[in-house]
Length: 103
Figure 1 (cartoon, rainbow, N blue to C red):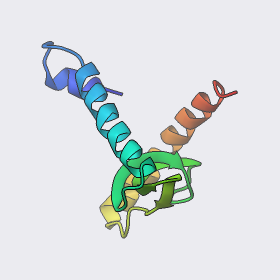
Figure 2: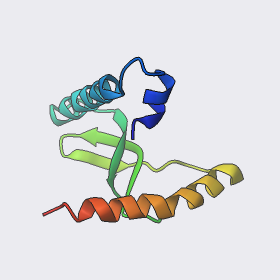
Figure 3: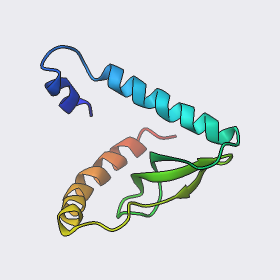
Figure 4: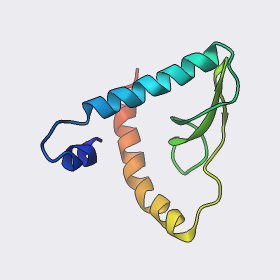
């Protein structure tokens, strides 16, 4: 979660403001897309098939229908591919945990 931000702030606050700002920025872009503005691209954690996980965060084109197109993350270097493969088991475990709270 926000542990890295909390550590970087060295006891001078939490990550709440950073998360609130990110949420406000994302919400503004979603609303602009729903309002008909075109060409809006924002990273979005959504259900897609770009990785070996049911949900993944990747650049996404937003529009009148919400998510118009999941753009993927392009070519990865060997280092990036290795990191992706190493993190997928933890991501999938967290997704499973989250889905248990879903109706």
